[in-house]
Image (tube, rainbow, N blue to C red; front, side, top):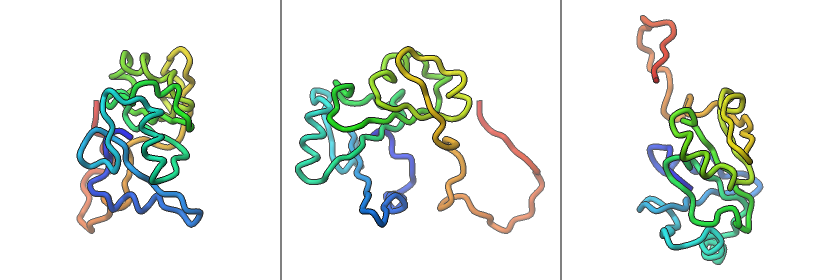
Length: 150
C-alpha cells in the first residue's frame, strides 16, 4: 500500500516466489489492484480483498505521505511501515508509526528516529540501486563518487 515505487508493474514479478508469495497493490489511485476510500477501515479493506486473494501482510510504503486506512492498528493481519524521509516528515510519522506492528527504516533512521511506541528496524538500504533500471551503459566515467540529495 502507498506510492508505487517502480516505473511499471513488471517489477512486481520480482517479488513472486516459488513458495507462492505474490504482491497486490492497495491504494487510492488508479494503479492499485484494490482501491479503498477514506471512509473504509483497514479491517474492511482486508476483508474485501481476502474474498479474492489471501492477505498475509499489509506492507505500507511512505506512510508519511500516504496514510493508511483508518484503524490500521486493528488490522486482522500483520502490518509493516517502510519509511524513508523520516527527517522531513517527523510530525506525520509521530502520528502514524505506533499504529503498525513493524516499522522499517534505513540505518540512520533506526538510530535517530524517536517515536513513542515504535522502534524502527533496519531492513535494507532505502531508495538505492534498482537493478532493472540502473545499469552500466559503457560510458566513460569522469566522476568517481557522486552524492545527490538534501
